[in-house]
Length: 192
Image 1 (cartoon, rainbow, N blue to C red):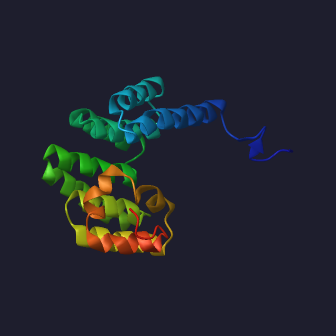
Image 2 (cartoon, helix red, strand yellow):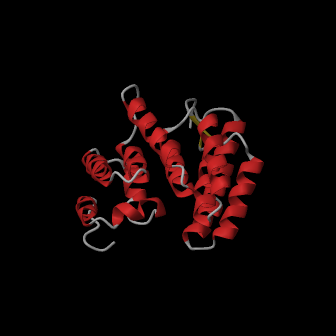
């Protein structure tokens, strides 16, 4: 392959950036998959290792926050989401999951503040409906969460496909009978 953005089978750029992406994806897989299978202790150790090995990788901190929350280590989860937000200039999906961690910790005012920040941010730049759905779920506004979910379906947001059926953060939303329409639109049928 000749000159251009793809050389040697990888995207052009510095080797450090390419290496960081590989390391981050490896720790996402190692850190997140055991947590989804219920082995949150193993997952949390892997997530911690990922953030230690590459403290500048936003995805490592985001996964660390998700896994720490699954494990019940809410203070650690909040800290990891704070780090991810600082590294990545407050990415919407991080703010949304950070709101859920605040809700779980009993910090409802902070969860509401993050949801409001996301809504305000959406007036200035792109914020996925899926991120708004997650933050609306965090504050218990299931009507708004369902509306955002349906809009995410209409706009064919890929993140919704990943989160729709299995992601623990959306359990409250999945329990609402109206959520069946979201699954139907995603061609998941009635099985949840």
